[in-house]
Amino acid sequence: MAKELRPVEELSIWEDAQRMLEKARRDGVETAHDRLQEQTPHCKFCELGTTCRNCVMGPCRISPKKNGKMQRGVCGADADVIVARNFGRFVAGGSAGHSDHGRDLIEVLEAIVEGHTGDYEIRDEAKLLRLAGELGIKTEGRTVMDVASDMVDACYSDFGSRRKSVGFLTRAPEQRRDLWKKLGITPRGVDREIAEMMHRTHMGCDNDAPNTMLHAARTALSDGWAGSMIGTELSDVIFGTPTPKRSSANLGVLKQEQVNILVHGHNPVVSEMILAAARSPEMVERAKKLGATGINVGGLCCTGNELLMRQGIPMAGNHLMTELAIVTGAVEAVVVDYQCIMPSLVQISGCYHTRFITTAGKARFTGATHFDIHPENAMQKALEIVAMAVDAYAERDPDRVEIPVEPVEIMTGFSNEAVLEALGGTLDPLLDAVKSGAIRGFVGIVGCNNPKIKQDSANVGLAKELIKRDIMVLATGCVTTAAGKAGLLVPEAASMAGDGLKSVCEVLGIPPVLHLGSCVDNSRILHLCGLIAKELGVDISDLPVGASSPEWYSEKAAAIGLYAVASGIQTHLGLPPNILGSETVTDLALNGLQDIVGAAFDVESDPIKAADLLDARIKDRRIRLGLSE
Image (tube, rainbow, N blue to C red; front, side, top):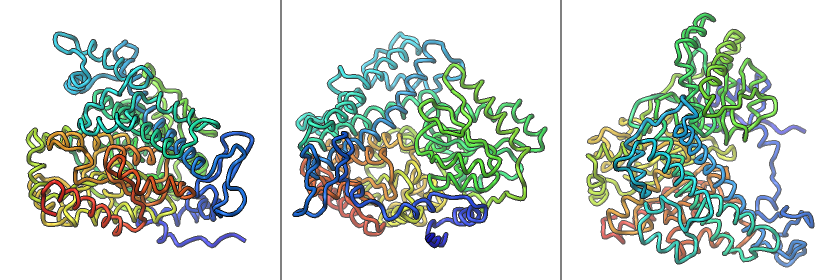
């Protein structure tokens, strides 16, 4: 017997989502919420992390009954070893995703330096030179291209095996770097740590759960302080460092009278070209000949965040809005690169006139139209893609179009450089606000949607609760759209903050929730913490800061959470990872890491209780620094 569908009001807090979920049901379109309902109840062994498929002596599973059978796999591995193995590989997958994104940016910079592309350029030469100085690259008396060539080599080296530490690790305070060295978890190279994680979790290798978990931390650190950081910094160099600007968000950003193209994924390399092609007079004229008034490019997930930060394009939605955006019937094309792209989008696009277009060889989708984009052919292929989208406009059925809401205004573009500029070029005003208690601390709320949680209820609930307590929120990834739709990404949102934070926001003309970018841009938060810690002469673990991913789901989020904890930032998760089958691993994550790296994980589904946990950490750190609570 089919399960009764849940009311849409239980699935999302948003009107646009609820209305499109209703339309999807009318149109006979299956969504992630429907598939979750079909998949539950989940396998208990998998939820606990006690299944192992690492060799064909198995697969094996460990019984949660301690005195029963099946306490060891065929090879003899117990629950602790199996859970640690699985989590280590989970983190390796996440670290690989964001770091490979960073590698793609190195390849674009390399193509610029070698003259293989005219479609990309170095837009922020000053930042390139600053980064070169950080990495010990000589700049005086040299051309920008010569410096960029050395930057390419330095960044590639951070993916290799010959370094003792990655280049940007100098951004961490000395106390933290000394601790990593003492623990043997200094990240040496992205690919080295990921490969070693895979080796360690092969049968017959690392069979000590805490040891495996420490290398998982090292792997995550290689992502946060190298792979992701390279991705962020080189994106700024190539596409421009973000500055504050206004935009809009929700499904209302779709335009009834225009060709609507949505870019989705995580890497700006393709989406920047799609935007440029869509703005070309040739394509605009083509659209007008078909009766459209123009071409509208909107964003989904982190590719959308990248263009939002730098170009101000509107955000149509986050992870659980990606299917529903197509259901509006107003989208001519969804152009994707990689990561967080549901395979279901191909089928849903087929229910309408929407073209689903892939652009990365590492992310092909059966049934999609594929364009193989590289630096040397990027604009040519982007023009072909936009032309395909424009032509699809002629097939749009007006009777099937429903754009459910009006867009809301948001403010974006808060790179670290923009924050420092707003403060007059120094951290002193920010630190003074922290010392006075006007800003009690900072929490980065990052990451995803998960259909197990009412969409954005935890993301928004936590953000609202924290700013009430004079804790400034730094948002990245899918939290951005949630905060924007909730009215938290505009200066007027200061009215929802505590008196102290409100006063600071009003003086600076900024929101109490600052948008710092996409998921790789969590590296901006690491860098900012490093700057503050160095300014105060303390470790990152001494700061009144925290991190949270209330609705996380992905391997990348696990890597982000672990590199935050390993960097000394207490981190809240709204759902536990699949580790509860091991008391050893669970206790290490929730408690033991506190004694090892000065931070640990908290798991709490209720956003108010999560705010209490983060608030308690901030209060404790303020007291230790000799500040008022």
